[in-house]
Amino acid sequence: MSSMLTQLNKLMRAALLGVLLLAATAASAAGAAQSSPQPAPASAQPAPTRPPAAQDEFVPINELPESEKLPAAPFLIAAYTIVWLVLLVYVWSLWRRLSQVEQELKQAVQSASLPAGTRHQ
Image (cartoon, rainbow, N blue to C red; front, side, top):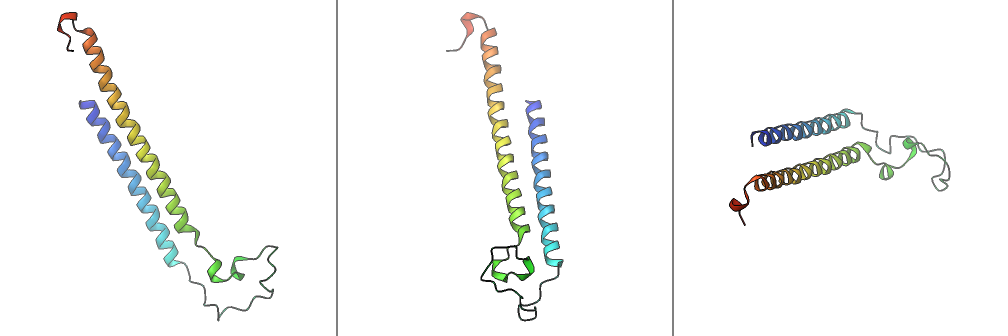
């Protein structure tokens, strides 16, 4: 029982560390996004030299309209957060199922080692 509590304590510490790392990453990315210089309004930017109708070739990001620009950092942070949460839930599920199997195995060994007349039905 003591070893199971120790394992639970280690697992909870690891989960807490993972959550703290994710929070720190999200906070630093949010701070970097806020501190980055904001682009000038469309009226202050020079008009693109090429017409936007034919986009069969590469178009630099600074020539795209604002409606077509997607910030990558929030999507990346969200993806990593989801993956880590799913992984932690999966590991926790495996840990619980393994501890149940270990308990059942201990009970089976104990019942197998008892004399035949004292076994519980």
